[in-house]
Image 1 (cartoon, rainbow, N blue to C red):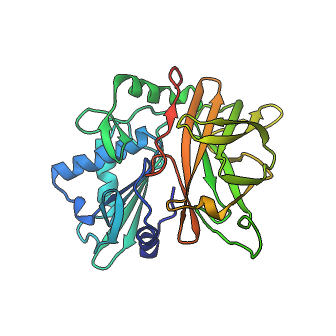
Image 2: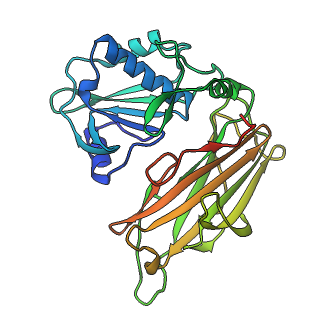
Image 3: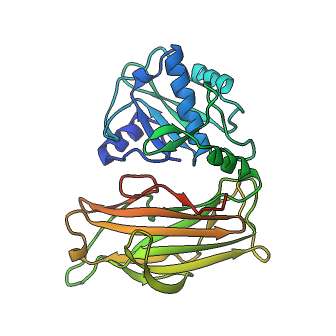
Length: 323
């Protein structure tokens, strides 16, 4: 979840051009009204996030083509209590852990609705008696097998990896005179679990675009050089978890993939016009397997990390036959 508490935080989303994704949705303040259609749309969007990977709806930002345009004037009619009451009384079962953050804007409030992924309580139903998921920047009805998969989250692990630079999703790229590559920067990985079912064994494989220079692989084992499922040449690195002797991966705790982080650098000639680098994360555990795509984009002297579901990285893909 993004840490969004002030208007300055919303302004930064606009300034950085952070696009909508699987876990981030922008809506203008007037989208919150007390008519039945707006209430149903609110519940539909919130339940879709809960049935997917969780995420945040930001009311107070106008968007175009999934990109933020500006922070609007805010809403002077709707309250945080009203939003909470509408969601709690119209989505079944009730979503636990929902957080609604009001943000003072020029003429009213914007709201950040932070929605956890559903786990032990199963799939969440919208007021129209349908189940929705987040896909391609919108809420769409789920197929029967998808509803069943969500229902299984309580009995199987639902693992995902969160990548970051040392300072978050942005990393200033610096070059020293006479050096062929940039100064090294860190790629940090954590593994988390949406499900209440712990994972006692897991294998994480990270594929790094071969245009990225690997200075140090940290505690990872380097396994091979091979294309990912999108045809991008990758250097592959692996780490594993086992309990015992280690701790299981459970919902309440974020775990580091490696005590010693991966250190990377880039050649200036690989920055190009778009400066895009692919990252692929494959996770395997008993009863669970998935592939996640990330991307690193070079923009104005800074590297920006884009998560699954963003403009440059497709959505997470669970493997067939797994929850």
